[in-house]
Image (cartoon, rainbow, N blue to C red; front, side, top):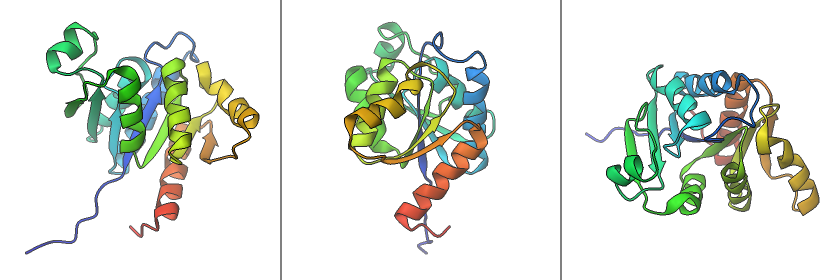
Length: 189
């Protein structure tokens, strides 16, 4: 018997792998976002890296959520030995072999929605990729790093506002992002 199957939404976490430009409590904020994604029964997707994405993965993983990583490496060996990336808190890691910039584009395409927390140059790259791909996006405001530039970039680019939720409260950001994904895709679950 074939059952009715509704795929789970995939929420990508984009953020600083090195958190020095972030607010002091950024790890806790990222953890709360991962936890909320897990509590909603959704899939957390990360770049299989350190910093903010790892803390979001930990929040999801420790709260019974499923976590998928997309590595820039070609193999587990390269992931660990060349890129020096962790494997903790992920149920599955896909080795893209695309390097960082190629992996970033894959991440933005995989997600039903993307949450941006703090950031550096890679996060900025993922933000502009997601905007160009017309993705539904959520920005954790007041998290630091390149996040502070996103609004200004959109203003200067004169390309419209996109489909972006701006929110400083982690749990509310996840809820609002999911509501917008459902509305835009006409999901009724």
